Length: 339
Length: 251
Image 1 (cartoon, chains in turn blue, purple):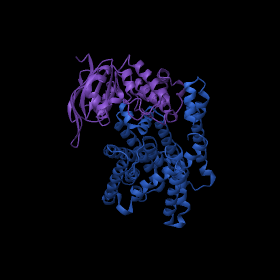
Image 2 (cartoon, each protein chain N blue to C red):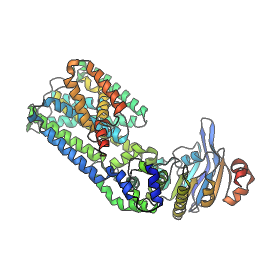
Image 3 (cartoon, helix red, strand yellow):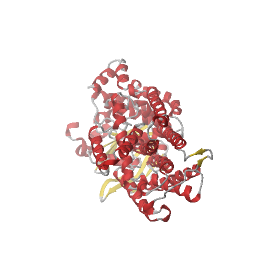
């Protein structure tokens, strides 16, 4: 109906602007940036106030690690259209490398983090080169297979201590100044890392690279016909995503003080899909909200034991059936805003 | 020779598991012309297109573009040489605005497309050119409309604007009029006629009145082979073409 109307107006006179602008008020880049800026400020303030609010900071730190994990995952699926089902391998690899470096080599926290991220980035290059050759479900299957392969390697090699994991990792002094064994200091360090990671992802989405990535997501053959080597962009997005997941995994070591098989298990890859989906795929803030929802559930429903998984399953089904855009996606859609 | 013909193929053949979709096609596209490729369904027109733009690899044969052998190139590389295609189903980026659609094409030539650390506001320098291109195809008022919300005929126009943004030497249009109403056909025809002053165009098209109106030369394909070549007047008298394709109804 509206299409027909638009066409009429075009063929007729030049007075169609009212209709077209009203239907696309949500794509005005300035308004969009403003919304996102406000949302970011509110998020930052709320998170900065956590230690004085009486909320258990350990829970929030854990949620922040998962939020960064999910944001990085979302960069790939939400903006590159690539569903990785093996992202736990980047989380776990960075975790193991950072934990090992801190505990066995006794390096400082910043070096530990750099090593963890570098390991995930390197793994991202190798697995990315293999996986991006295929599309759709095959891409997902290859990432799943690679992460399973890695899981069994980590189960066997001595430095991960198999089922026990690397326990009692020392937190140390960041840059020799910040004592990470103090919960408050650790909290703000985790928060800063999360915010920096979040901003980098936001910038990537809204960069020249992000524009090309989105165009490939929208219509890959067309992007190729415009002269873009789609595989190179997808690989780049994959490596970026892997590195940022690595950052989340490295920081998580300081929070949990251990690195274990849980983080490389395929259920972790599934969990990040769930987080991103509940929050809203392809939204900037969705994965953050999703992470808080899912981690809160695990935390506060822990007394239900294994039933948590059942509840998660139900939420997953409900999400796919009723609010497919996710929490943030639905809110944004309702207000015709992009968040 | 290569000056006169911008695109030439020699013995172009494509087999799919024993089925020969395109057989031994020698095509010569004259620089600056509108060249139409017609033929009944399944004649191999789209396969031909895919071969020329390297979306498919020929089984045998050679493709020369501006005298350069492009048979072994990747599709993105062919596009970078200025041989740009469109698709049968309208190929826009649905959730980008019309302006962004065109800008993605403009952005490619400027080599900052891997910069993930820069704000996309650096792309604003292309806005002016993008607006000009939209204006040229009559889409100024759609600049901020997501492509998905545009009427079908406008999407095709947007697609052409996007292609023009690359400043190609040659455009391959795969059924530019498919699924369009009368008014849109007239508009897009006029647009193609207008841009043909600057570009060489090879198009696949089923609408014969469009073909008759626009093309300088027509190649008729049947069962993967070239049946005849000539202008519309010549071909419409050709008995073989009539039998294979036009039928009695198109006299």
